[in-house]
Structures are given as structure tokens and as C-alpha cells.
Image (cartoon, rainbow, N blue to C red; front, side):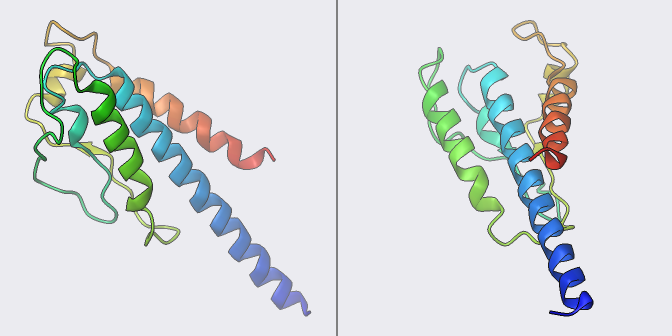
Length: 138
């Protein structure tokens, strides 16, 4: 094995591990967002979308739609379990978008709706950073 081969191997390994850490951190963020979202009809929770390389402009219909928290666990499982499949074709360096296209999501985050304390974006950024910090600890 030449020095060039070793260098290529190391480069490939670093990219793969970094990619896995980014995916893990993104899944942790979706899990947290699904946990802390207020649930009335599950519409907001079901609209956390994780497209790769381009944003999505449409909103989803809730898969499990009901009222009074009846669907929270079903919706959370559907969202969190579908997130890893988004990354099957992701290559290192691809842009990952974490988005929600429900019209009132910004008001919800800014605490302009009474049923929720808001500020979930800063909370999830902390989770994402903490997950990424694990990249150098093994």
C-alpha cells in the first residue's frame, strides 16, 4: 500500500464518518422537533421535511389526522422513521434542508401563538451542534 493509497483511504473514511455524523445529528433534530411541537391535528409535526440539495415548496397533509393529541405518537413515529430513508442517496457535501412549509410555523417559533412557548429553532440548533461535536470523540 502506497502513501497515496493510505491518504485516499483516510480521506474516504473521514468523509464517511462526517456524513454519518451529519445524518445522525439531523435525525436527532427531527426527533426533537417532533417531540416539542404542539399537536392539534399533527399537521405541523408531519411537515418537517428533510430534502437533499433543494428545498421543497409544498406542505404535506398529515398522515394521521385527529385532534387532542390522539395522533402525536403515530405521527412522530412516521416522521422520525421516514427521516433516515431521505439520506440513502446523500453524498458527503450535499446540502440538507430541514424545513416546515406550514404557513404559521414562523409565528409558532416566534411565540405569536398562545399554545406554544416557541423558540424551537435555537433549541434544535443546540442539539445539532452537540451531535456534531461527537464527531471527534470516539
